[in-house]
Length: 280
Image (cartoon, rainbow, N blue to C red; front, side, top):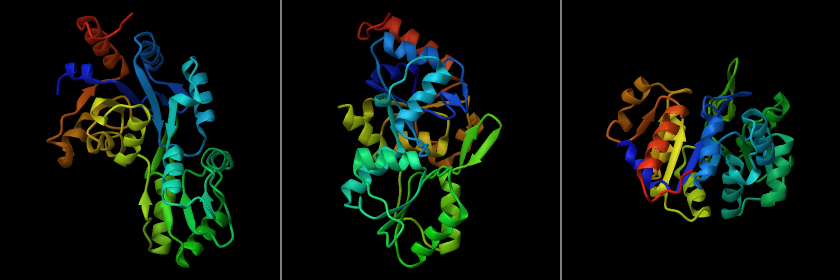
C-alpha cells in the first residue's frame, strides 16, 4: 500500500490517547493535522476506547490540550458503542456498572441505560477510575451467581505521561480470574462493529475510512477487520518491529508513518497533486 491510498479516504478516524495526545501533552503535529482537516474540508472523527469520561469531557480535555476547539460531536467513544449494544440487545435495564459517575450519567441520558446494584441483569466493566474493592467484589459475586458481564473495551493499560495506568482490560482480567467466567461480549476497539457504526453514521463505506492509531492490537486490528485503510503512527505504543513480528498482519496492507507530522506532509503532497481534493 502506498501513500496515494490516502486519496481514497472520505472519512479520517483518529485514535485519541497515544495518537493525538499523551496524558496532558499534545503529540507532534496533532493540532496542525486537525486544523488541516478543517481547512481542506475533510471529515474526521476522534475515536477513543477511554470509557472513564463522557464525550463532552473528552472534547473539553482535547480542546485544552491541543489549543483548538473540539466538539463532543467530533468524538465517538466506547461508551457510544456500549450504549448502542445495550439498546440493540434489549439490555438497558438493571445494569450493574463498573463505571465512573459521569460515564453512567452519559449512558443514562443519551441511551436510556438504567443502573441497579440489586438483582442486576448484566454487569458492565469499563475503565472505572472510581473503582473500589467493594464494587469489584460485588461485580464478582453477581457474576458467580450467573449474571452475564460485558467488557466495554479490552485495553489493558492507558498511556499517561509518567507511564501506563491499569485500564478496563486489567479490571476485566481480575474479574475473569476471580470468577472463572468470560464476558459475553468485548466491545470497543478492536471490534469491527465500532468502526462500522462510525462509518454508517457518516454515510461512508468502511473501505473509504482511513483509521489512524498507535496500537496494533486495537487500532490496526480494528481497521484491518473492518476493511478500512489502516494507518499506524510510530509515535505511540507500537514500533515497526512490533508490526513486522505480528504474524496475523504480515499479509495485510498497512500504511506506516513516523508520526503525525509525517502523515501531514503526505496529505499535503496528495492534496497538491490531485484535482479531486479541496485544499487551501
